Amino acid sequence: MSSAPQSPTSEPFPPVECAFVEVAVNSGQPALHPFTYARPEGMEVRLGQAVFVPFGSRLLQGIVLGETDTPPEQEARPVEAIADPQPVLDGPHRDLARWLGVQYLAPLWDCVTTCLPSGYGQRSVTAVSPVDVPLLLPSDPGDQRVLQYLAENGQTALDALREALGLVPMDQLQRLQESGHLTVAQGLARPAGRPRMERRVALAAEPEFARRHASELVERTPRSVAARVLGRLAEVQDTTLTEIRELGAQRRHLDELAAGGWLREYEERVERDPIAERPAEALPPATRTEAQAEVAEAITASPGEYLLHG
Image 1 (cartoon, rainbow, N blue to C red):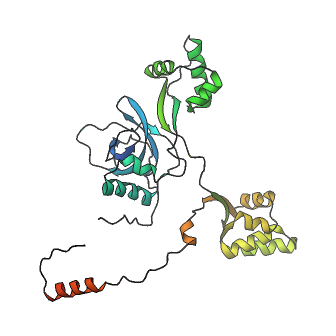
Image 2 (image 1 turned 90 degrees about the vertical axis):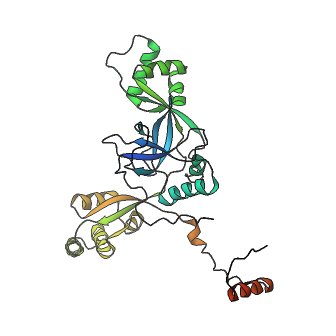
Image 3 (image 1 turned 60 degrees about the vertical axis):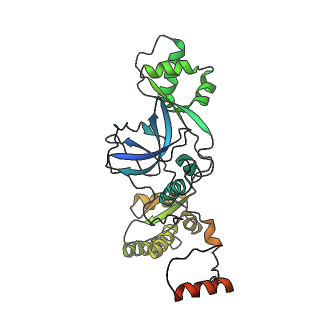
C-alpha cells in the first residue's frame, strides 16, 4: 500500500505560472483524473482555487489541483472565469485528494469534496453573470429587467435574480446567453463559514525612532496613549489589535499614528489546528509472538523464498 502524501510547508495557494491547469470538475461523472484547461493570458489563477470551466455544452465549477506546460493530446479549452477569489484547497489537501483517488480508485471529485471546507460543495447553485450588456437594451421588457439587474448587481445566483424580478424562465436566460449578453453556470454554494481573520498592528518605523518619538510624546503629555502604543510596538514590532486597545488606544489614536507613518494595520488569517491540542501518544514498538519469532529466526538463518500463511 502506498504511503499518504507528505506536503512541504510552503505557500498553500501558489499562483499558477504554467500555460495549463489541471482541474477536478464537478461533472457528475466518475472521472479518475483531472481535466486539462488552458489558462487565458492575463488571468491570475492560484492552485486550490475554484474556477468555471466548459464541460461539453455546460459551464461547470471545478478546483485547480495542479499546473503543467505540457499540452494535452486534444486542444485544451480555456478556463472561463474565477468562481471564488479565495482559494479553498491548500497543498496538503490537494495532495490528499489525489492520493485518495489513486489509492482507492475513487472518482477524483468525490475525493476533492471530502477535503473542502465544511459546507463547500454540498449545495449546487446556478450563477448568472453579465458579459456584454448593451447600452441600448432589448425591446422585450423581461430581457430589459434581467440585463438591467445584472448591470447594476453583477454576478448573482439565479434564486436571488428570481426573488428580485419574479419569474425568470431558464429558456429566456439561455437565449440571452446565446446572444452573448450573459452566462449561466452551475457551481457550488460558498461555505457558510469563512476563515477566521484577526486584526493586527505592526510597527512601520525603526524601533529606535519609535522609542525616541514615544519619549517626546511623554514629555509633552505624560499619560500619552500614543506613547504607550509606540513603546509596546518598539518592543514586539507586531501584535494584535486587541492588545493595543488594552493600552487605551482608540480609533483616533491609531489613525493619527498611521497617518504619521508609525504603524500599519492589517488582517491575518488564523490557522486553527484542533489536533495540536491533542498530541499523539507514541505507541510501544510491536513485539513478535512466539510463532512469529520462530519463523523470523528460520528465515534469517537461511535466506530464500518463502510462502507465509496468516
